[in-house]
Image (cartoon, rainbow, N blue to C red; front, top):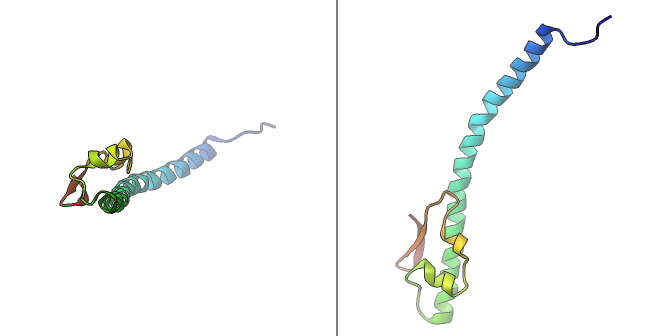
Length: 97
C-alpha cells in the first residue's frame, strides 16, 4: 500500500496556504507604513525633550539639529525618521520634513 498525499490533498493544502498569504501580506505592508509614522512622531517628541534640556543647560534653544548632535544630546542616526525624512528644528520645535 502506498503512503503519500494525493494530488487533491496537495492542491487543497496549497490553496489554503495561498489564501493565508493573500490575507496577511496587505496587512503587513499597511502596518509598516503606520509604524513609520508613529516612529517619526515618537522621535520628534524625544528631540523636543532634548531641545528643552539644551535650552536649560545653554540658555537658548538650538537653531539646528546639528547643535544637538554636537552637544551629545542626540546621535546622528536620530536626525532621521524611520521612513528616511530628516528632522528639522523650526522656532525651537522639532518637525519631520
